[in-house]
Length: 97
Picture: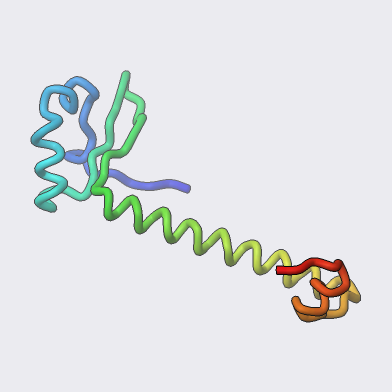
């Protein structure tokens, strides 16, 4: 996956270290969306508001669940498995809840 960054979003580790409070304030006040931290001319990290990170994490979980569902659906289509209710399975395996 390729993500683009604006020139003013990329800061060196030295600049981030010296202006960390301002970076956080700019993120909080939505003056900037994110800061990309570069070390030795390599992009190493992204600093973003916690709300954005949490939203991304939730979306990642949703995508993961969709992928798992698709795998299960594909496997069920290939097999001759019969569906049984949870209650039937619990009785068959002698599991009490």
